[in-house]
Image (cartoon, rainbow, N blue to C red; front, side, top):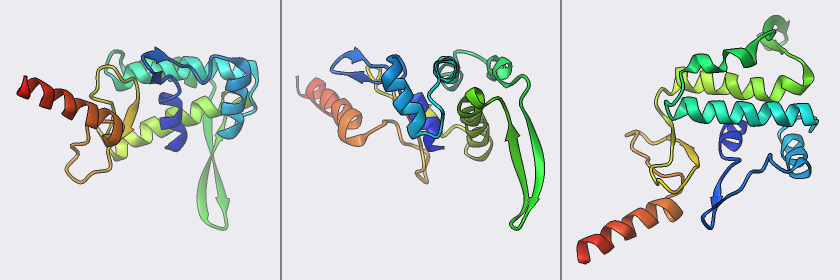
Length: 159
């Protein structure tokens, strides 16, 4: 799930300007390799496409079916290991990281429905996975976005 959040959050807004960790080929290769990919240009292009589709799906701007074309030709094969039954994901090497992110999103939706969401700060483009018991987390970071929102509301009340 870390890779899923890292992928979704690879286009942050820093000082009012959008950054893209996958936009620059050298930076994108580094990002992909840090997450277990090969860093090829084909992988980076697919990661950018996957990220943008996942962001739209999580924001409910597109239906989950929009992810289907990225899963064509992908299948799982059962394997018996010392730990029991395991499922091996079979995909072209350049697509593995993107497919794993989609699989992680699907697992999150199934196991923690509604807990993967965008930050409530409209100026922020980050996402969060709410692990709180009450399922009320609203900001990617209480120290940054949460504090800004609370300060803004306080300023409006005292004005």
